[in-house]
Amino acid sequence: MRRLTIPLLLLFSAVVITVAPFVGATDLSLLGGADRAAVRIFTELRLPRVLLAWITGATLAVCGLIFQALFRNSLASPDMLGVSTGAAFGATLYIRLGTAVSFFGLFSGLSLAAFIGALAATAAIYAAGSAKRGGMTAATQLLAGIAISFLFSSLNMIIQYSGGYTDTFRMMRWTMGGVQAVGYSTVTATLPPLAVILLIVLVRAPELDLLVTGEDVASSRGVEVVKLRRRLFLAVSLAIGLNVAVCGPIGFVGLMAPHICRKLAGTAHRRLAVACTLFGGAFLVLCDTAARTLWSPAEVPAGVVTSCLGSLFFLWLLVRR
Image (cartoon, rainbow, N blue to C red; front, side):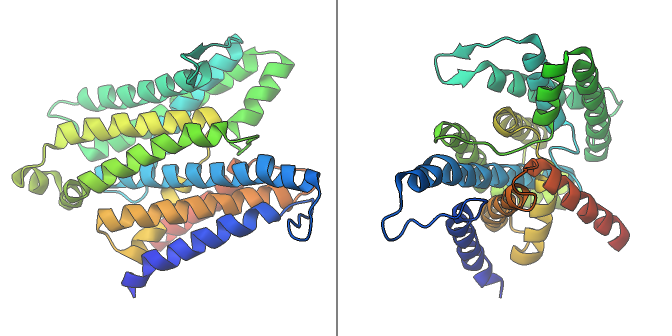
């Protein structure tokens, strides 16, 4: 049965991407001589938004898979460990300062600020874990990440409180996490991080398989655990930082998708990474579609929907265990 998991997830993801652009407050029919307005809505608004949601969901799912392998804990995820909130802190501070810069026309100041925030959260987790005599264990890092997450959340609230009404409203809406796209510039900006992080997992899959069995076992088989952990943390920080800069912090996708896919596709990380990519992307597209249609003509951020579902899923995991 598990041999059919990847083809079925591929079919599921393809159907979601195909159908979602046609769902919305405005009915679209591109067949039989559609008018120019309908074509523009489809090509410039809905299709880029669906593609951005799919890429973001896939990236968050793969990053969550990496964290769960590093900590050998299915409850670990980028938002739980402070990487997402660190990226949000950098982006919120950038918005509060009111600056507008870009680098070589490729990276905006907001993207760089989010990446620096994610990197700062990663460095803080390492510093807190390294302060413990005898080295840094996975459990120590997990607890340090949760503490760092609360710290950056508090700093975000301080920055929002200190701003004016306009800036505070803008930062508050942004920190809810949402998928907004006009054209394909955001799609092309978020696609490389997904490609890089997925390639890293596919190449490092045998090492991740060993790491899940225990650090001692992995070290005895030749895995450089400390170096591998640092490299993966840096890669996740880059991917999360760029995605948060575009969509804001969207929570719980990195928690739910790997856990569900592990039940469907097994524990081999090469196969699991592909399953997480397909399922995570389709999942966020469905959440974003619900966010923009269920309350029509009003719209809520997709991050609100994922947080509601993720909270219930987290409680279910705790009760089940």
